Length: 146
Image (tube, rainbow, N blue to C red; front, side, top):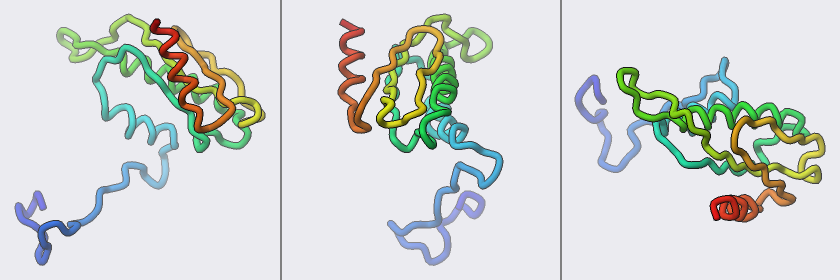
């Protein structure tokens, strides 16, 4: 459409003119990379006062043996990326402040090989016994702010 500067021949108002490309290529991309590119990078630069991450059942592979490492990497990435501030000549720079990171930590009943990640700085892992228990993490954030 951009190259032709026109609507495709025969297209009518309100009809689909094609499809959005899938941002995840068939090879060379991991789920973590895809998630970062779609759900994080596209919302930056931005500065947040805190991050709440709710772990979903689909995020646990197998019995959870990789959870600690993957959550550590995710937390570091989010804290770094969302901690940017306007820089002088370089566009965006690190703020130097720590962003609190709250996350749900599935219990051993939900993932038998789960372990707690090593996250630098302010962070709170809230153990949940039910995948739909978002209120536990929200209550922990409220308690921390009060």
